[in-house]
Length: 289
Image (tube, rainbow, N blue to C red; front, side, top):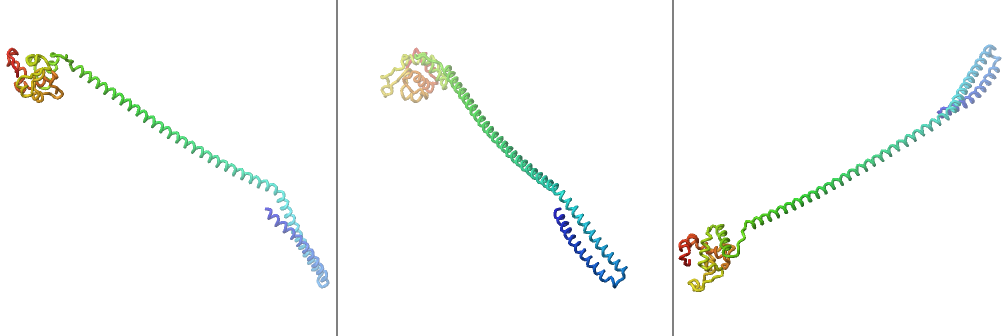
């Protein structure tokens, strides 16, 4: 807009110059016409002068009109310049405000994104920590449960063993340490190991062989002469004892062990110790076997 006004102002200057030039030109024309008036018809001279003057007046009027238009444009531009400046400033201020608002929105969005990420990271870390704690607690609980179960199982096993031992102890009779007790214990062991023998048969044999003395040794018979004297409650020689003893009952001077070996020998040789006693008159005609 200001460039256009400047262009109009240059046109007005040129118009003044043209006006002056036209005035000079008009003067020259008038002078020429007057100088030649004598050779032309007065009417023609007058018409020419009138025409020239009319053209000069029109040119001047046009220049004046152009100058007035230029002044109007200049005045209008001058009056609008503050409005344009204010509009430009308002537009610049608005652009700056819009940019500031956009920058703030971007900063707020970035801050929110950072806060959201921090919150998500914290939530993930908290969950991982919670999961780890839960896993550790589960492992501890399982270990405790396993330990409790093992303790209970050990206690149950110990109780079962104790109960079995008590039952075995209760089932195992206590025998007196005398001839009666020795015979009863030997009978139980012989019956359990496949050599049934009666209490009476053992008692008769013990009384006739050693008078019930587990430490009796016969040093005068034929066995003694051979170096293998008869020993113990049923007077068994060592080779016979070694052949017929039971495992765990290997002491020839132990009355129970001695009875076991003697009864097993009689069963192998005569069918049973009871047969030996019966064949010998129930003890009234007893002789060694």
